[in-house]
Amino acid sequence: MSIPLTQYWRLLRRYLRPQGPKVLLLGILLLTGIGLQLYYPTVLQRFIDQAGAGTPGLRLLALAALFLGLAIANQLLALWATYLGQEIGWRATNELRAELTEHLLGLDLSYHKDRTAGEMIERIDGDVTPLANFFSAFVVQVAANALLLAGVLAVLYTVDWRAGLALSGFAALHLTVLLRTRHSAMPGWQASRQASSQFFGYLGERLAGLEEIRANGAEHAVRLGFVQALRTRLQAELKAGRGMAIMLVVSFGLLAVGTSTAFGVGLALVRAGAISVGTAYMIFFYTEQLRRPTEQIVQQMQDLARAGASISRIGDLLAMRSTLAVHGEGAPLPDGPLALAVDRLTFGYIPGVPVLENLSFALKPGEVLGVRGRTGIGKSTLARLVARLYDPVGGSIRLGGVDVRSVRLADLRRRVGVVTQEVQIFRGTLRDNLTLFDATVADSRIWAALDELGLREWAASLPNGLDTELASGGGLSAGEAQLLAFARVFLKDPGLVILDEASSRLDPVTEQRLEQAIDRLLLGRTAILIAHRLSTLRRAGQVLSLQSGPEEVVAG
Ligand code: ATP
Ligand code: MG
Image (cartoon, rainbow, N blue to C red):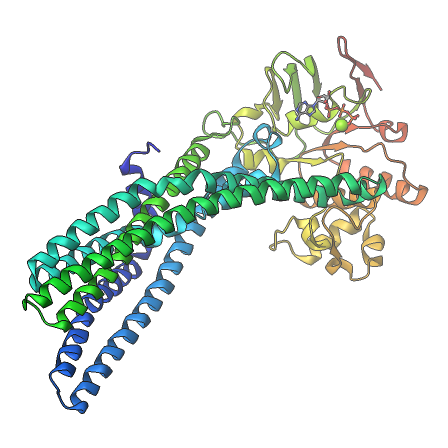
């Protein structure tokens, strides 16, 4: 992973600075822990030697109590440090998640259409999770463990230089071997992450399409796919597990070598009368302690590699810019109904495959344009272009005399209201769905809007009025959903409305409600009515018939 170290450093600084005091406290806790770990083996040594020399029981008991106390204190410190580390890690990564979410939402539709929801979740959450440890522990842990390692070796040298030398050799060997094998688990983990994201992507998509799957009797195929996805996942996990196991086996093997070394050296030194039995035991104990920091350093290195992969993916994502840049300072749109001028508009989703070609028309403020044409001709596409979800390939769209490319997107979206063909209902109350979760909109305004559109009766007939919970993607009929979308747009009070009518058949009552609502919605607004029903089109001053040849506008 070739990411410059400065990039790691920048990330750390950026997300840890707001948590400065906590990071400092964590550092202090970890250092104190190291001090304790270096100190308490000497208590053991004294205990053994004094027990051998026949010291009175009470004194031995005091030593034992001291040892116990230190061990407990060490555990408590570790607990506190873990808690703090988690908190720091979560805060930092949550900040990053929020930033990524906002960035992703700002990207244009052409980006989103190419990707599944599961992939988005992976990018916002999956890529960020491995960074939690990097933020909370990496620097402190690596520094602390290096210090602990050095400390243990230094103490060993002061006990006996031969023991120090032997165990330095052992530590160097252990570290080298672990650093070399650390990559053995990496490819496995990557594959397992990939498999799990695919599995959840599959699950999510199938669950969302439950109605379709049941209605068409595709359960069996779906179940097969499920088993297949799970199998892939299992294999990947097994492979990753094997990689980890290799590391563990290597580590334990080396540890056995280390322990034998410590025993051998200790035994030789005791025989030669150079050290006491207690000291020999202490050497052995320190050897055990060498293992932890070595392993932790290696683990941190592994995490660093994983964090590196994440950081590069996150960097790529953040570098992605929306193609819908605003030209200039952001020109203001005039109040009231907006004039619309479309000039030689050309657009295609795929380069070289134009959907709209050289389309021109003009609407004065308050005029209504009807649009019709066979399915797939580009009616909804026109709506998307006017709302600037995409930019034209050629030609221009001017709203109130201003090119849409020079209007700030927030302004544009506020002044252009679109009722899309497939109205999206979100899980939440009717109120939330009307205001799109804008809590500042007063109920009185909502009721006023419903009244104006003749929908009060309908809304009041729902079990809990505005508080009726709607399920995402369901719960309302197509006609009702459209009524709701009308009210949504009406609350926004735009200067241009675009109605993209679904070709669904409506019952006469709903149809009449819709007609009324459309009449009211169009009052004092410029409008584009994409319509299948003649009754809708009768409002249009001019009708645009989209065809796969030259476009024509006929007077209505
Ligand atoms: P309908 O009456 O069925 O709603 P429409 O006139 O609204 O049809 P559009 O949705 O504008 O048709 O689609 C026009 C063409 O563009 C179609 O051929 C469609 O397949 C294609 N198209 C639409 N969206 C995309 C997209 N995101 N990427 C690629 N092609 C697309
Ligand atoms: Mg359409």
